[in-house]
Length: 345
Image 1 (cartoon, rainbow, N blue to C red):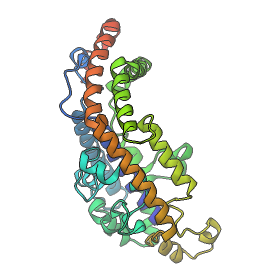
Image 2 (cartoon, rainbow, N blue to C red; image 1 turned 180 degrees about the horizontal axis):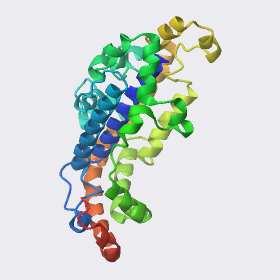
Image 3 (tube, rainbow, N blue to C red; image 1 turned 90 degrees about the vertical axis):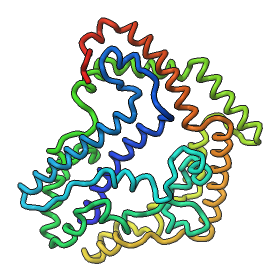
Image 4 (cartoon, rainbow, N blue to C red; image 1 turned 180 degrees about the vertical axis):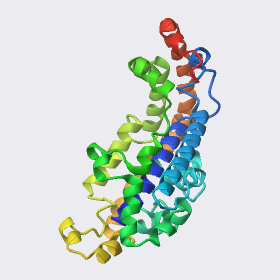
């Protein structure tokens, strides 16, 4: 279906930005010198800015390949601007995830970014839903696509994504020109490294988490947050509690005003498109009251964690110190095996 295909393309692209954002979110400044980089010529575990640059460059090159492939199939295709997409993913308020102002507005970013602002109204916190109002900026092909006939749209989708069966188990991938463009984000040398040392790297990070410095850091934050009157064991557990509260309250952004699959199937093609393009309705007053309390609790706790020294920047600084020490141990323990990866970058 055309609208679903359009959403899928945006999802594929947004996934790249999420990957970039996840890589960069643990950073908190310039990384320390990497013992691993000194040996193999590439900082695979800490050069977050370099990783982002490589992801974006590879994504832009892949988009060029998609455009060439689509032209061969008889369609116009404008390569995506990943710089604009990265801006799209960061929100319209200009706040940086994890920094103080962001935390004071969004908390951990769970219940506060669960619904769009239109769904929660002006009294609660939501994300700015720009997939409808800003699609053309994110996807320069939208106007061209909407100008095609329904048959042409199906042919366009097939050329871009291939047959649904090409997606593999669970629809994890795409075929067509997207599939031919190749994977983004991992070069052969990096794959070889993690094929060889993946288990050791995982074990290294587990030891870092158990390091007395990491344990002391977490305990200091926990005790401080508890002194402020919160029940708190760690951030991961706190996020799970928030997610459970949302589930227990049956608050689901995809169920608001939804109809059953049987009802949807009974609609005409035009009615189905109109339904998919509809604006999600605003939450009921009762649901707003429940969500409002969850958001208040989340933000209060997240601010306490931040004020108690558990900010992403402070965690990143500790991670960088631990990583440098444990990388050195890794390099010394695997000197012979690492010879084959020297200068891979």
